[in-house]
Image (tube, rainbow, N blue to C red):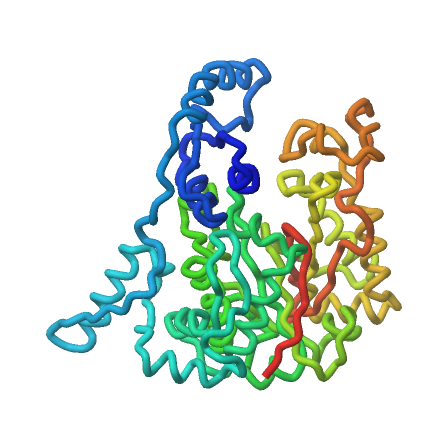
Length: 437
């Protein structure tokens, strides 16, 4: 729309009721000052063909009205600002509480207490970066905000980070700007998508990023994990403008959105580390950004043969409620991830299996009946790849793979003792970036 409007060709945006704020915010991000907007009475999801025709039929007048009446695309209440603020109270603690209340009212916080981003604290945070404060790391989707090093530092302060965390955060922001990460879907989807950071290399131990027990959980052992992951969420909100109800349209939400950061357990990984597998030297520090859709535990306390352990993983992967058919579209990636605990990894490795063996087994043993994609999920038959359109006339019991190939499965070793691993579904593809200091 922005492209056509800037060429002088009139357009009208069709959006469902409840998504108007997102339409206006997106228009703002693409530089439109006014927007022709037609609001439909319902999102065209989970409707019968007859109900779709009804919704569209009564919307024609709204489309005409939208073409002839523009909506001003103004500033949004709660949008981050370059202003500075002062807070006065009986003592410093009450002033901090007042600041938190004010920030939360404006939508700049995640609901947990924020550390005041005073000029002194921001300067100390900037000392951990090798780049100048005004350097633009990226123009951040979905709101097209300029992610300068200084703005990243401000959000890192609020999250409770230390200056030495800055290189990891900056590298993660760079990774999320890559097209294959699919930042717009991660940030804007009606699903519970959230970025997960995976740190590899020497910096993981230097910063005490937890790779063992409770790596994705609370506690002192995961302090670095928590504050780094939290900084990414605040950056997505206050620089990328992914505010809930405006550009972040998540239906229910997930605690994953508060913070997801861990390190791979390289000490107990019997295979080569994840970043080496992706083309980096073992002594290079990297961060991988991964768009998580959902987390499922894989409990197997009985198996002692590799094929039985991986069979449990394959059974978990046959989840009809996940986006198991998205890979059938030309424009989508759906690359699941296995966070294998050390106990499971040892069984699989000692049985002579490589990571590629895991991927091949997962691919061939996680097929699912076509009926689950045909009637559920989000797959639009009109968008199916030509080579797979034969499925439209196939029997419902036809078995279909859940990914485009074995290499779509990613394998890492994370966690502590006992045979409990994690299977992650995703949106987009993981991106690995070198951490520069």
